[in-house]
Length: 492
Image (cartoon, rainbow, N blue to C red):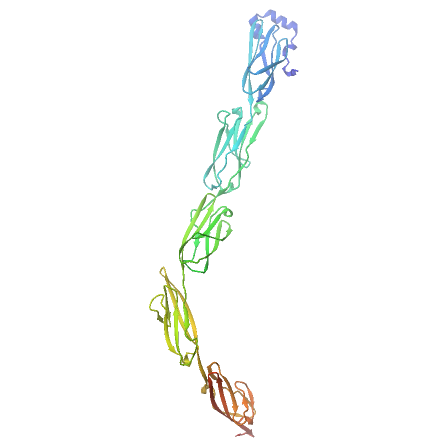
C-alpha cells in the first residue's frame, strides 16, 4: 500500500477546473502549469535500506510517468497522473528522476538520496606504556567507514572530557585523527577514548555515536638527580653492613622498581615509600678481599636512575696476643708474642714489629710484681690512606708463695677487756693463701677481720700462718688485754 502522504495531489482538483485550464492554455504552457512532482518518503536512508518515491502531476492528460534510477525499483502503485515506486538495497548516494509527458511535452524532476553508514571500526591506538609528566604524547584515533562524511565528526576524550572534535577527513576508507596532549600527574591512570558522532539531526534523524574501547594512561615523574647511595668505604671479610639508597621527587613512588646489587650479587632489599621519596635498605655480606661496586638502580616507567659506589673488602686478622706461660711460677722465663695477618703492623708494649705481617715479642722473668700484669698489643692496617686499628690485651698470672704483709698485720696489740675489736691481718700470694691465727699456749683461734668481744683470756702470743700450695709464711702477733678497775688499768 502506498502511504497516504505520497498519494497524488491531482485527486483533489475538480474535472471542470481541469477542463477549463486545458482549453485556455497552449500545450507548452500546460506542461509548465502542471509540473511534475517528486516526493521521497525519506531521502536519508541507512545503507542497504529501502524507500518509497512518488511521481505525480496535476496534468489532465499525463502519460508515461516513470522513475529513472540506477537502483533496483519496483512499481507499487499508479493511477491517473501518479506512480509510486519502491527502491530497495540502496547502498550509495544517488540521484533519482521522475519523468512523464503532459500533452506530449516531457516533464522531469530530480531528487538526491543520501545513504548513511555507521563507522565499521572506531579504535584508539595504544598509548605509551609509561608517559613522562610534562611531555606531549599523541592520541591517535582510527576510523574506518562512516558516511556521509560531512556529518561525521571524530571526538577524542579524557574520561568524559572532550579534548578535540574534528570533522572526519577524506573518503570513508580508514583515516586517522590525532591530537597532542601534555601529560600531567592528574593523567595517571586516566582513561582515554575516541568517539564518532554521525549527526543526522538536520535530516530529521538523530545523533548516532560510536565509542572506542578506553585505554588507560600511566604517567610518571623521575628527577634528573641520581639516588643518594650510602655505602661504607671498607668492610671486613666475614662481616655485614647496611647499604642505604634514597631518591626524592618520584611520582608515583609506589611504582618504583629498586635493585641493590653488590658486584654480581643482587641484594635482598627492603623498600619504603614516604610521599614522593623512596628508601631502599639492604644488608651486604662479603667473603673475599678486593674492591666491589655497589649499584643502586631505581626504575620508573621507561626511565631509570643509577648510583654507584666502590666498597673495599679487607681481611684484618689479629692481633693475637699469646703468653708462653699464662700462669708462670715465680722466676720462670715468659715469652710474650703478638702477631696478626699479612700487611698488618703490630706494636707490643710500645715496641713495633720489624715489618708488617711480622710478629712482635719479648721475654721476661716472672716475679711477684708481674702477677696480674696486663700486656697490650696494637695492630694497624693501612687501607687507601686510612689507618684501621685494633687492640688486644692479656693478663699474666705469676704463681708465688704466701706472704703476710707486716704493714697490714701489726705484731703487738693492746686492747681493753670486754671491748669489741677486729684483728686486721692480710696475706698475699697466688694462689690466694688461707690465713689463720692460733694462741700458742691454748691453741685457741682468734677470728681475722671479724669483730669479737675481747676477754682476758685473749692475752698471749699468737702464731698467724698463711698457707697455700706454694708454701707457708708465719708471723708472730702478741696481744695484751688490760683490766679496768676504778679508773686504773692493769695489764694481764
